[in-house]
Length: 206
Image (tube, rainbow, N blue to C red; front, side, top):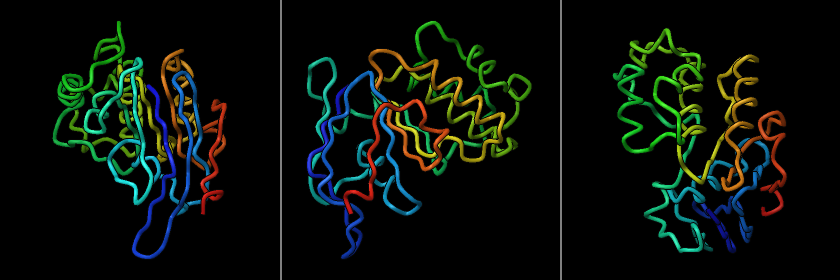
């Protein structure tokens, strides 16, 4: 999956959050989007995901040499962010059964296997609304990390995780990186993006 961002800018009212941001995101790479809170990191990630339109500029997508329309990007995208909601009336197994119909897991992985990877085996019949904030974040991460999607976007991935959960994230984000997957991490916590080869400082475009 290639993302070619050209001259991106986003404005709220009369205030520009960032302007003239251009970058070529290549498959098999990991890029960190850095900046202080409120600088526009999540806004940029939402634009890359096709969830938000830029005020100026554009993002072009391609997969295996073929252009991908912005409306088709969600099919190829796995996205984890603390502000994304889960259907909390489902049990864990019900949620995963529903989710994997829309977003299949990586080859060779089953729902039961993912539950074990997330250390949520004892909670598999519990309603998601009963989960702690750390369990919910591990669930969001597990569904994103282990989705069969060539594009992985992570926004502040260790939010609500304790030290053990943060170590779990670092272990598993390393395991799911492969030659063809494009990873973008929005963060201001070095441990969340230490594996990234490239960085974009959003303050450079303000």
